[in-house]
Length: 239
Image (cartoon, rainbow, N blue to C red; front, side, top):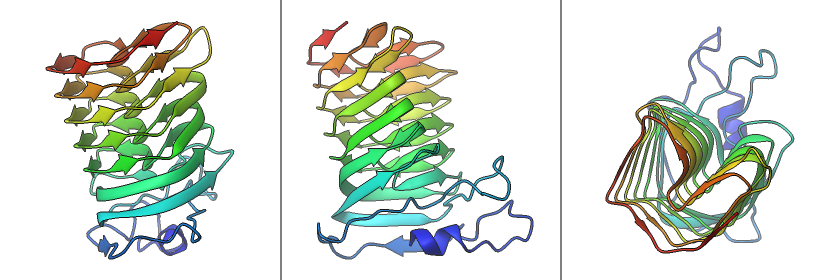
């Protein structure tokens, strides 16, 4: 699927991804010995300002896959860049996801897309904006998702669900894993590392340890112009 998405664009000017409006369905678990090693949706090497978006629907039907995604670039996850028409639903992943900035289990960079009822069990490691579900979320919707994989940011912003969220709605999500950001200028939160610009976080639970050197919180490391409603913290944090 990664090769199919990353090499097929309908529009000659590459402004629109061919996958918009298409439906992809996972009908069985992918065996652990068939590890996913390529991100779906990658930076366009011909024009680094533009990205190859995934704009379709991917329904995992509750099935599981294992990933082993290592990259030195930004936007690393099962889906590197999810656009406004992109929708990911009902999937579980395990393994390891490692990148530079915008590193998430399911999506590296989510721009107006939706991630629903997904569970991450993979270890997530990034320099900046590392999240169990999504690395960086902008105008996104994340609902009913769970993170059970350790999230580590070696420089800045780590969150159980998203490393950073702007103009984003996060609802009914849970983190039970350790979240850690290492530097003195870092943000680490059980749900989001740094939230701003009318982000809303509703009915979320954090039961994982949060570790950081600067701004840390059971739900959010730092919140600006953010609404947090009926969230529960049942964890320790350490700074």
